[in-house]
Length: 324
Ligand code: SF4
Image 1 (cartoon, protein in one colour):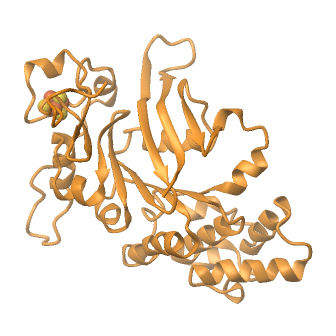
Image 2: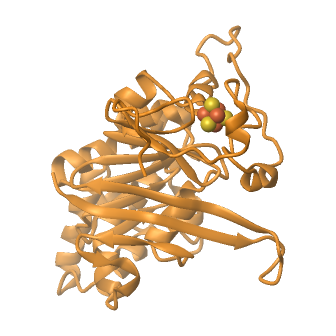
C-alpha cells in the first residue's frame, strides 16, 4: 500500500454571522490523516463534526484556512490543472435526486462527463464505456436510456451517480453520506459497491457517514470526529470493536438496537453546537462521563495506544509520553 492522500494540520475557520463577525468557529481543527491506495477510510461523527467540510476541502469547494492537503506528492492547493485533478478524484453525494436535474435525462450526465474529459472519440464508444460502468454497479444502459431522474428509484439513481463517478477511472472516490437518503433495504447493496470498487478497480474511498454500522461493514480504517477534531483513529475493528475515547463509546452505545423494545443505552443530546466548538480544553468535556479537571483547561494531545491514535487525557502512550 502507498499513501495517496495526506492531510496535515488541516484547519477551516468560519465566521459566524458574516465575514466581519468576531465569533469564529473552527469547523476543522488541525486534522491530520492519510488515505492509502485501495483502502476505504471513513470519517465518522455526528452532524457538525467537520467531516463534510473536510471532504469539501479535498474537493476544492472550500479553501483551508491553514494546513496542507497532498495528493501523492502534490499540494492540492497548487494544482493548476483542475480537470486532471477531477479526473483522479470524484465525488458521490448524499441525495441522488439533488445530483440530477429533474428536467434532464440521466444519460446526458454520462455523455457530458465523457465529453468534458475527452474519454472517448465517438458516441458509440462512449456508450460502450457508459454501459461498462453501469454494469459495474448492477445497472445497464438500457435501464437508464431516455429516462428522467424521477423515473428511476433512489437506489437506481445513486447507482447511476456512482457509475458516472467511475467514468474517469478515478483513484479516489469521496462518498459523502451516500446511502442516508436511500431506502434502508437497499443501503447495504449500495455500500457493498464501494467495496467492489476497491477490490475490482483498486479505488480508494473516503466514506463520510454518521452511520457506524455501515462504516464497520466496509471500512479498513476509521477516524471519529467531534467538533472539528479527530478524537480516535485506527483500524475499524480496533476503534469500533474496542473503543477507547469516551465519545467513540458514546456513539457506539447510541446505535439503535435491532429490538424495538430495547432503547439505546444513551441518547446523544445535542447541546448548543457553538458552545462546544468554542469550549476550552477538551471540546467533549461538557458531556463526557469521565471528565476530569484537566479536561476543562488543557486540550488533550494525540496519544498512540496499540496502533490507535486517541485524543484524550485518560491516555498516555505505551512509553508513557504524549505525541506532539
Ligand atoms: Fe473526557 Fe477528558 Fe478524555 Fe475529553 S479529555 S474525552 S473530557 S476524559
